[in-house]
Length: 501
Image 1 (cartoon, rainbow, N blue to C red):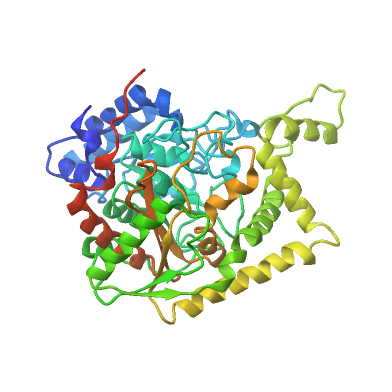
Image 2: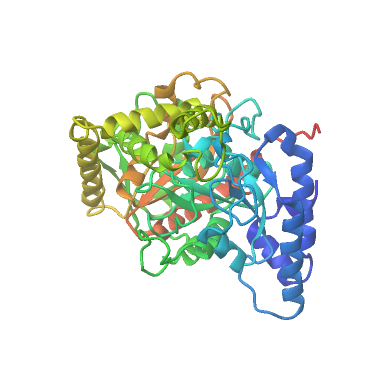
């Protein structure tokens, strides 16, 4: 295996700056890795070999000409297949968009290109980001590189698996109810959900517009912060974008000083239903923060227990509205258009063939929740609960700087284990959903391996709106302290992925 793929994004950037490696060499090493192992991992839906090498060559040319480049210029990245990239297949993991090539770049892609970051290709995901395991992709399941018989999380399992398999040093995910943080926890990588509105949704194929948040994924806290800085900031193309400076996330990731930081352990996010190994690693991480000078107290957020049912009314309601555009009339799949069927029949046939079971389930649930006579009883009540959850955060932040919990109740489970039990699947997001409903910043950082199965455990940090830097401060402190025990980041303890193809 090339040494280049084992380097962090920051190390790769330094190698290019010092002239020890070129972007083309680094990009080719990662493309070779994808060719070697992705047949087993299935992290990617589309690999843009020619385009990636052309982007890398352009960065090398600019660097040779003495241009001042962005910090991550020339570093490769894996992009979740829910963000449009001009001329590159973009499916959102659904058959209904199979073969669609967008005519424009999302703001996220524009910013990646402006930063000189090389986009390797598009990663697998649950269809329209509806899922917690990447088993709902219309194009097959992604496998966890730590154990190919287990799921990598979802909906952004492809992005996190690409990192854990050393197919890319950086990735972009989107987080609606935990789809960056939960896969990060399951694969021993770093996943950050920025403050809602801190990153642009323009060109993001919407699931739930009041919840969706693009964000960075990486193997280290600093790499995630560098990527966060490159993609964040105000965008006039997104009406929900916040016109405020980007928090000092890179400085926080380089500092990692938690002395005097007030840390609140959320009482409601633990106990019954949580895997013992997950709780053990979490409490050990809390002890580490205490030793580093943090002030740790227990905090109650009583309405967090209602986050899951509220979320699964709000999200399907918004999804049913957002997905109405896939009507066989404008773009994407079209079935039954043989001249004998009405437009309504063609629409029905297309949506029947193009949408998977989970998407249909949520469309029906959302349509029912929004229907006449039920709107106030379901959707209206869920929005009231959302307000109460946001108030829990506000009240908690009067006493502490950040809140912490396990990122997930369990480690990654076996493929097929919960696919037929939607409620069990939804419970994966117990810890992550409250931050989406409130819109504050949150992140998952690796904190060890569970005793029961030797699989990664995530440490979840929640910070106030536009205090994303506090997440990175805690993550950097934890990463540095644990690296002394592990001899590096958690990925150094991962089993070597055997190359079989």
